[in-house]
Structure formats: structure tokens, C-alpha cells
Length: 389
Image (tube, rainbow, N blue to C red; front, side, top):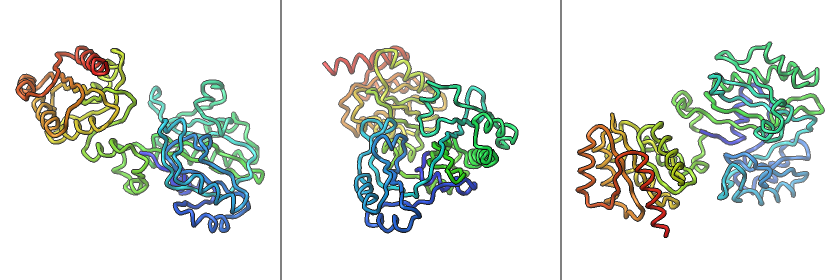
């Protein structure tokens, strides 16, 4: 689950991390009043979408007057903002964040995530603030300093060493140590899977400010944080992913043309790999799980077909808890309600497989069957190529 920059800053402020004062804006009529209320002559008008690279896409403007702020807000609010993280379609800007300008001296990077190889959360810091951390990692990996920490957060000795590595101004070293420890505690307390401040700036007045913030959470831990659910912005989520979550389905949109319906995350990943092996690309990840009903399967199938980029569908089920006849019944029900105009390949194996296969054969539907995953992937890729000719 992701949230907006201004929401992340509000959460950081609760952990006593300094952030610029600002105001959320959804109505252009409020911009001039907000400019007058904020301190200083310089404000920053920032698009609020769940993606990075907003500045490069034209979604961040520094303004030195009320007229400039109004002009920037009019240009940004409602625009279809395209960044390297939104894809070519972009994302509509439905809200702005207008904040006071900062007297920046230096820019740093600070981020917390999970290092799966080390099986530990890790704090990453760098003197290369304001840049894409991926670019820094690729070109100057020595400029990224990392430190593991445990359930108690980052210890003081490690934090001190990181600050020394970054050559922070002597008068600000204790502030940096404090911020690093607070960041790790926020990451743990909120069940984040990523927390990033880029840039973390020092000012000429010797303040340390989180000038930008990005935060996402482990969706599986949201039952512990009902207050965070209130921050969810459904306009920023893929409509199909949102619908899937309402039916208890694990669905992620991808860029390919073969829709997938599979039970089990591991089998779903393997299915996508074999599709790619045969020269095609999956249009989605979809795990119907082990406890799906006929109705849930029908919803899942309809969800796959609702994607206009889908040129063919591969159903790959290994029946254990999820019985093959239940899958067959769901597919038959869904195809009976929806006009199926793309090739459909079904591979069933496991519990009640013969019953499921018989149901499909007797349905009278144009279903292509396969005995194993490799054959299924080959048949669906061949079928969509034939359809395209």
C-alpha cells in the first residue's frame, strides 16, 4: 500500500522528524490564500501522485509570488503527469501540496527497506541526495552506505559511523544520528516495506529537513494499522487490482498480452516465466488462492478478460485444496456470461482433475486443453500468433 508525499511527511512529523510546513490543495480557488498564509516569499507547488520523478515530468514548480503559485497550480492540477514510474499513460493529478521553500545548503539521501538476501531491514544513506538512488547505485555504489538493524532499530554506534562516513557538518552530526534512529523506528512501527527521504537537506540555518518523502507499507500488516487504511487513495490504484482485492484475489497488472489465472504464487511465477520462454509476455499475475469458490473463479476470469491488452488466456491449476472441478465450474460460468473472443488454454492437474476435464469437454466451449505447463504455454502463444495473422 502506497501513500502520498504529504501523508508520508505527516507521519514522519509524528516521529519528530522535521518537515516543511505545507497545505494540501484540491481547489484552485484556495491557492492564493494559502500562499499568503505560508511563511516566506518562496513556495513549492507539488503534484501528489504515487510515483517518483514528478519534477522531471513537470509536476513540481518553485514559485516566488502568489501569481506564479496560481499559474503553477493551474498547470499541474488535473494534468496527466507522466514519469518514469507511471508508464506512458501517466497519472491524473487530483491534489497538490504547497509548502514553504527551504534555504538548502546540502542534499542527502536516506532510505529504509528490507534486504532479502541478508534477511534484515537495512538503512541506506548517501551524500548524493536529490538523485535517483538507482542511478547512484549503478554508477557510484561506493557513495551508498548501508547498515542492518534489528527490531530495536538502529543502534547509536552504527548511526554515528554512518554520519562520519557522510562527512556531515560537525554541528549537525547529533541531529543526523537522531534522524537515522527515528527513521528506523518509524519503519518498524508502521510496518513499512519502504521509507525514503530524498532529499534530506541541511539548511544555511543548520536545520535538517525531510524535503521529500516516500512511504509504502506491507499490505499483509494493515490489520494492525486501521489508521493507515484511511490514507489509501483508490484513484492511484489500478482499477483491476482494486476490484481483485475486494474479492480476496492477488492480482497485479503487467504489460503483456496473455492473461493468466493460476492457483499459488509460486506456480503463477513459473507460469509467467514459461510464457516468456515461449516468446510472449504475461498481462497479469493472478493467484486465485486455495479457498476460491466457483463464484470467485468466475470473477477472476472476468477480471482477466476486462483488460483490453489481453489477446489470450492461460488457466493453469494444480488442484490440491483448490479442486479442479471448482476451477472448471468457474471458468464455464464466466465464459457463459462473457463473450469469449480470445483463445483460452486450460491446464488442470491434481484433485478432481478428471471431473474438471470432463466438465470442460462437455461444456461445448472453445477451450484448448493441455496436459502440462510447457504445452499450455506453447499452445496459448501459438494461438495468439495465429489470431493475429
